[in-house]
Picture (cartoon, one colour):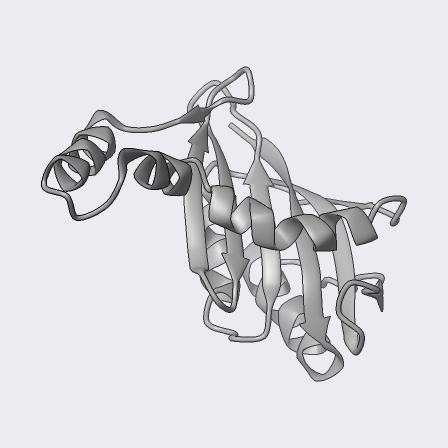
Length: 164
C-alpha cells in the first residue's frame, strides 16, 4: 500500500539546502535534487517543495529526519490511504514540531485523550480552553508559517515517486 504527500521546505539557509536533500534522499532511498528558489518572506533563505509517493509512515520519517535543524521551517503532508489516516507535520524554529492526523475529508482528527487533557488543564486554571484547542489544531504553527506559504505561491512542484 502506498500514499502520497508533499514536502514544503518554507525557509532554509543556503548552507542547509544540500543537507535537506541528503536527509530526504536517505528516507526515500533515491537521489533527491530540489529546485531551490529564494524565499522572499525571509531574505537570505531558500524554499523548495516536491511531491513524493511511498509507504504509510513516510511523512513521519521525513519530519523526523528534518526536525533537528534549528533554522529550518517546513511542512510534510501525507494523504490518507486504505491502511492509514493522513498526516501533517509543521515545524518552525520557535515552536518546534506539530503533528496532526488528517481524516479522509481533510479535517484534523484530535484524539480523545488529548481533548480530555486540554479540558483538564483548562479546568485547573493552568490554561484557557480556547488556547489549548488552538494548539491542538496547530494554529500557532499556521500563524507563523502563513507568510512563508503565501510567498511560495506559484512555486514549481516536483513529483518524486518511490518504487515500493
